[in-house]
Image 1 (cartoon, rainbow, N blue to C red):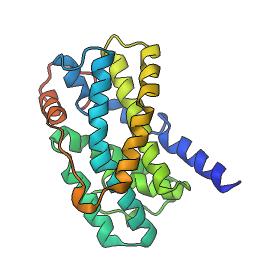
Image 2: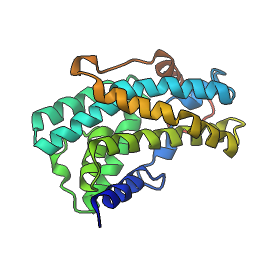
Image 3: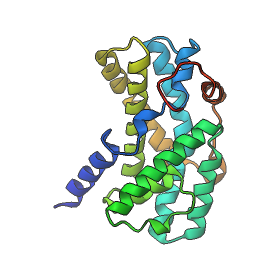
Image 4: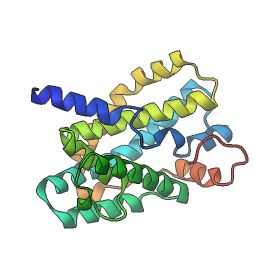
Length: 221
């Protein structure tokens, strides 16, 4: 098996919606934004997702790159630092719960495959577990980041499809439209210095906080 094929298979595996970490159960505040009327159609959803991608570009993706490098270099101090950094960036109880539950599920999956999960800090952030999975399955750091961004986008569109009058054609149109934004987020994540990391999205934070008491909901966040 060539290196290219191994990485492609690892990417397909890690980014697959069938990966049993429960991502389908969470909306990262999008369900509440739809319920509040902030997102009501395809154009509004595209704007919301493009804004949320800026959060990924300034927090999740650059931290993932650093966690991957820390694992690669055996730098436990850096691993613990960036693990705590990304957990601290979860600004509501639900967003932190979403991160923790998916991280635990991914750690269980890796442990069941014989991966040494003892290297991860406790409690592990999802980005830490994702970085370990990527290294175990032959992905590069950039492949790991791109796979996470794609997985996130697919999950958000699944949430929207279940809560908006958004058909599959519209969802696929948004996937195509946001591909350049995904590439841009990955490029930006690779350029940021340590002191440039971290970005608050007040609208998403407010939606997430309001979701905790939302009367009727399909998702856990």
